[in-house]
Length: 371
Image (cartoon, rainbow, N blue to C red; front, side):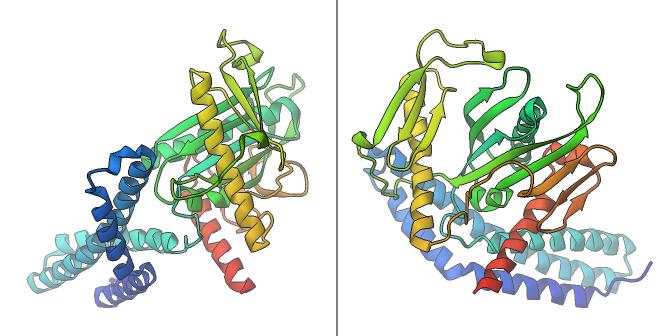
């Protein structure tokens, strides 16, 4: 095993850290924290709960960014001291400890470098994710449910709270569609690279002849609105329909008309919510998602970049961005980045950071090329 050139590795770590620190604009982060701290101690802050939650959440996110940079710088300094002591005292155990810390620091800096690429207008926001089954019948509905579980497991691994807003069950198995919020820093910027058509190839568990089936599901990701956003929707622009919530197989799970469907008449955008207990709660959740979608449409119009974030996802042949092959071999491959993993079970269990990181880097390269 080749001996590690620790001085060279430490120089490389410091160079990458300095680059990340420069891109992160630490002075701006500190200024934001100071301003948000002033807002957070204002006596009337909680008069507007939505604004208060936005301020405290953003303060936590910005403080977390600064703390993460300070911690990494401290760890690099400590490792340099550890290596010096290990060499001077001839301590192989300390060198082994330093080697392990080197690997962890390299991974931590790579992860932080990816975050610095999330510089879009709404990338810091929380996310609203919608999944809908596409071509492929019952297998597609089952695949949509598999993807829902995959993203919820991913969020769980990161410690991001998830709130399911709406689930529409298919008749035989799986889901027609599902919508959920992911509440975490940079959730939108991170998950937005997952938007597109996902393709599953496997032996269908629903085919009594055991034939191979190809099915599709579409993923849409939009940024959650913030109190600072101004999306006014006149009541005259909205049609409200109420109906009973339904569970698997079409069965009613609520004896009252608590589910709500909002139709934005000028754009044709439709949002349904049924997972809350009351009609008022479902209407509030539906309005929040409708405002988020209209916010995204507004940005697309302003930038003349149709399909830039959510896109027109058909969920069928010809426009898939990732394939999940379970038969005749095991592989998940992203068709944009060529990132692939042979352990399909781990991917479907939420281990998708490799795909997300590759997607973020790919998107940054595409934007740079276009400039």
